[in-house]
Length: 287
Ligand code: ADP
Ligand code: MG
Image 1 (cartoon, protein in one colour):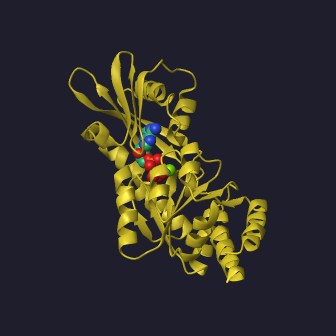
Image 2 (cartoon, protein in one colour):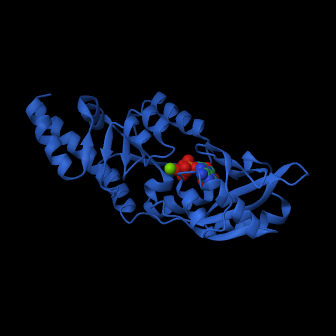
């Protein structure tokens, strides 16, 4: 690589909010053939809103969930805290469970918010509302605690998210460049499909645990793909590091910025195909 071509490319990139970290990023960007995109906060705005609270005592479900989420950085957490609007207890022993949920002691009980499998089965009394919320494409997080009869799911918070306006054009541009897009999420299949359909992705891997995200990346790489992972931060550091090329979008959490090879400070997903195209163009001038 001629240093001059790289300097010119980095100047052009910087003006467009695209920062490639050195030679590895440039060389790998050129070879990428598969682009895996995280859902929440990457394809969607991550500005979530609570649309319903389920359970026989929804006020307590919301209050306890919000108390736990005060300690969490996740988009889900911000939405729950905002919806509770101040009626929130003081959490103790807060524990973040990345890609799964969060847990803390509230009013002397251990309260868990997140994937239902963190707490237990979805009770029959909630199952039809729960299924309807999932069918609508919403994210549904379980809220559970021990009420003297063992830890169990006591309710749920239903959240809506919005697809970024730039997501569909970005996916179209990836396809036009001959790249294969994949949607990867810890959220359930129906929420994933709703977003995938809106942006034009048919390869969807949903409902996976954080280890499942890493396994998917390893699997695609073992099958010969050169894989870019696009994430927004909070939970995405390990996945960005496990891909051939990690791209962090938006303002990004520090952990993602460290793990990423490419940093896109423009909160517009068309920066992804643009970054890859810029790397290719730079390579051509180098040769
Ligand atoms: P995505 O893969 O779409 O970016 P995440 O990996 O951030 O989503 O989270 C996956 C799932 O884990 C969420 O859909 C939610 O069920 C649960 N989850 C993660 N963090 C939290 C949290 N702080 N509060 C509640 N649920 C959470
Ligand atoms: Mg995410």
